[in-house]
Image 1: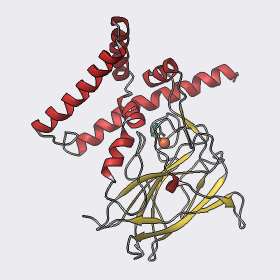
Image 2 (image 1 turned 30 degrees about the vertical axis):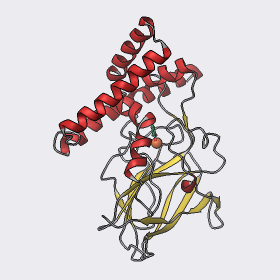
Image 3 (image 1 turned 90 degrees about the vertical axis):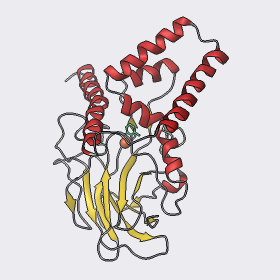
Length: 291
Ligand code: MBD
Ligand code: FE
């Protein structure tokens, strides 16, 4: 394979990922009752009016031309055609929604879910290994810790879902050609709330650049990078579910994540594993009681 055909194959896979996220989002919303949440008329009035005013204020302040207005129209049409509304929203808007949603929490910090979560990943014991291919590239990573309540009570049997990209930046079920549950799993903590996850250290990640989002990034002179990250959800009956991500110190994009989803409390501290090849890291999760 030449470099260019490799690049175009990787590009085609990345382009699929954004579009697949649209289809998967629609399925999930249908399962949840057909609408993405019921919103009352006064709330729609308030929010739609504010968004329209924010845009028209920008048009007036910046003296937007017809050429620019038509470029915007063409681009918005393309976001939909490329199936990239979930990607666009999760990269540039979700962090603010998450900030509002978790304002009251005292436990582990949340951050954005992003477009690539899939529910019901295979269940593994407290010390299980994530599903991966033979020879899956990447540094082995052992990730251990404990799930507790804010008052310190260990939460035995807590559920921990983990998903991350492979070494080339692809998520199973969104990029083609990967086993269904590659690098996705659900761990059930032991009676003391402890878990020991065996996975691989993820690589820094570029959001798909072939579609409308990539076009915006290029046109604006931005970059498409997210720092390497592990996505997770932690839950236990009677406690608020946490959706978040963990990051690695020294990643060149910890300070300029395109998705604005890095928080200092979400840094891991991997060390060489004394017992095996690769690295080991410890992170405890703290859950707030359900309100
Ligand atoms: C990702 O993997 C991701 O985490 C986000 C937020 C957006 C696009 C791809
Ligand atoms: Fe991600």
